[in-house]
Length: 154
Image (cartoon, rainbow, N blue to C red; front, side):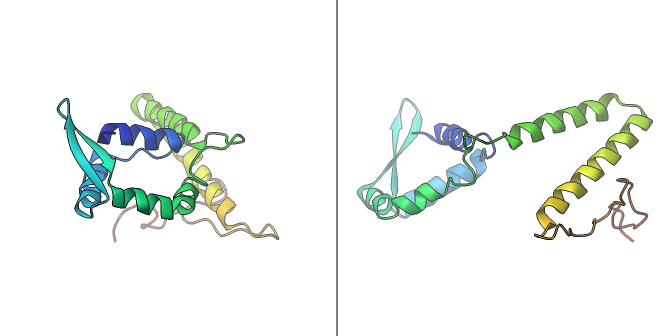
């Protein structure tokens, strides 16, 4: 398998939530080659990577651990494809950013602020339903007057 195929396979196995760049895949493959775990052969002008005997042994010895790597990343049957929804929201935001009026941009900023706060609230909720305080937006999604919240240095 060549590097591009690996990138595609990782994207497929992760349900599209992780697609590493060539800048991270190829150095990793080089390191694995240096460690004697993979070897690269030329085929039709491409470097095809294969596990060495040592790499095969390592994979066999750690098969359960490697299988568990995809837990929580790979989509399940009940998965709502959050990654796809995030990309759709980002696409909608880009559209508003490029074509929206100043009023529409202000409203989009409020929506995104509320969304960010709500997501952190979900992570911070405990069994009693208490949540962590908002970081830089008030209950209406308005930006606080804090200079750091605005991204402006003092």
